[in-house]
Each structure stands twice: as C-alpha cells, then as structure tokens.
Length: 450
Image (cartoon, rainbow, N blue to C red):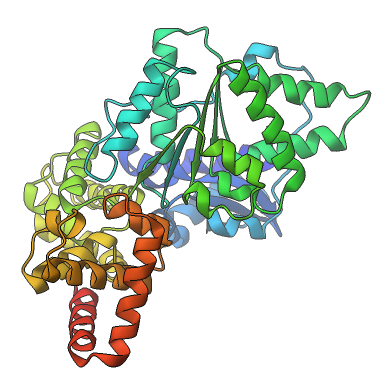
C-alpha cells in the first residue's frame, strides 16, 4: 500500500466518524490520494463542487482528523484531475507476487455502470443502441465501435456497461478496459524494464488475449508515435481474430490529426457514434434517475431548477444534486424544497449559469425566427429556415469553437463542407448586410443572458 493511501485511510476514518455516512460518501469518499509533498497530502477530486465543499471543511473537520491521526501530514491539498499532472505521483510499491493471467482482467469495470441506469435521450440514443448491439454480439457487429463527445457526457459509463453486460452473459469473457494513459504507461514500462523481451511479451499477451478491449480517451495518444505503433499492431491482431474493440475520444476520428493515417483509417472502419450535451428534458430524466438510485426525495421544482441552470455535462449535474443532498442532510430535511436547493447551489449556479451549449444556441435561434427545432435541424430548404440554420451554425462555431464535423453531426449528419459554407456565408454577410449583422447581434445577446 502506498504511503499516501495509508495515511489518507487513517485521516479519512476520523473524518467519517464525525459526519453522516451519506455526507462522507458524497464528498470525502470521492477523493483519491495522489502523493505527499512537503508534508501535505495531495488528493484528487473528480468535480469542482467536491473540491469546494472539502476545502470548506479544512479548518474544522479535516484539521481535527489530521491531529487525531497522529501522522506527519500537516494539511491536505485538493486538486482537480487536470491539475494532477503538476504533481509527481507516488510510485507503486513493488509487487512481490506476479498476478495470474486472469487477474489482469478482474476488477477493471465499475459494476454501477449498466445499461439499466444509463438515461437515454436525443443526445445519446444512437450511441446507446450501438453499444447494446455490440454487447449482445461482441466482435461481429460494429467493430470497432468509436464513441466521441465532450467531457462528462457518459462515454465511460457506456463502455463499462458494455463490459458488464457481456460478463453477465459469460463470466469467462476477458474484458479489458483501460484509459489511454494506462495503455501508454504500460507500453513505456515494458520498454524500460525489458529483459530478454519477457515484459514486452507480457504486454502483448495482456492486450491481445482480451476478448473485448476498450480504450478510453484515445485523444491522449497525441505525439506518442511508439505507442501508436503498439496500438496499431494490437488493433490488427484483435480485429483479425474477431475480438471486439471499443474506443472513445473527445472528438471525431477525422479530427484526430495527430494520429497516423493508417490508425485513423482503422478507427473509422467500424461504427462511429457521438454523444452531445443533454437537452433539458434529458437532464431532468438523469437527475430523477440519480435521485432514485440515491433514494433521495426531491420535488419536481428542484429537479427542474437544477436542470435549467446546469447544462454543461452529466458529471456536473450529479455534483449539483449531491450538494443539494448534503445540505438537506445537514438541515435534516426529509424532502428537499426549492429554497434549500437555491441556498445549496447559490455559489455553484453563479459559476455555471454562463455555460452555453449547442441546445442553448439552437433554441434561441428557433425562438428568434419563430421556427421549429425539427425544421432547423432537418432538411427543409425554405429560405427563412435555411437563413436561421446558417446563423445558428455560425454562432455555434463562433461561440463554442466546436469542430465543423461535430456541428455537422448535430445538424442531421451534414457534411463538414456544408457547415463550412454556412459559417463562411454568415461571416461575410455580417460585414456587408446590416440586417444579418443585427440578427446575429440580437441572438448573441439572447444567448448570453440565458
């Protein structure tokens, strides 16, 4: 056991004893020890809301727990996942016993990620359907399956759900889920410790013996040419042996310009599906499902308040709901009311209210031009609809900076050249046509106020 893990276990035991189980699991249970620097324990938080809440306890609960633990640690520092790279992770202790071949495939999946608790909406129904088809017929349909979308939208949930479903049918299946970082680190480790090619052989066998290989966040292969080479040969071996491959990324394979063309070509040889930001209706459904799982009694008014104010991603939705649960627990309320929810999220909502999504821009455009969402996204070519559609495309690219292929997928799978034409046309008209310029400015103001 690492020193940081051991010390955090001691400190957190005192923290847990000082509050309710629900409150502890919501906040402190989500922290992961990373390392110890200058007698300070560095902990990684998955959410901004968790970091803020834990920081609020540092002068009371945390300080008392550190004193009671009697360790040499004097304080804790909570960092977000993207800040963790600024710290040198503590080295894993040397394993005395080599795990068996079967052990490398165990405990790689989160059992709480299933298809049953994955909320399906317009933003993810195609990805969900494709994932279920893959889980029911691994290696035969849609191989590889490539899932792309923004942070916190459910890509990892779907990948784990595929693995959990397959194992529920056949427990002997070898399911290997890894992040790209784990794949790269494993490959580098095999090169650094290579003796008589034994570790290289072990690395190859680990990945090529899998019945299902799932690699998350493939965009992190940027500038790692040797790792790309290793993945290329691993991919070919698995594909030729009809083993299922599932990959995820934050962008379409076409946008992965740092990848070798032969690797990009293989990624696109199967089925590519996307997950977009959830609509208000889907966010409401997600919150209801999360509240049901956590057995938290909450009114529709509170659910809609959270859904309407937080549109960034599913993780932040869950974080906001957890904060509301925590406040209700502190105030000993069996059913959460809207006033409690507003008080719990007053700082949180201030940070997130200015987050703009594609849905915000499209909805504002539909309202402004008095047209239906189905028409602006659909294929109708009436002049007023085409004009509104092109302005929406221009604003999405200008405000959010979303790649053209991603915008094209949102607008019914339109080719990126069509999206480029719309963007460039409105850009030009904004300089020469006062009416178009006024329409764009009006819409921009409407969107910023939402």
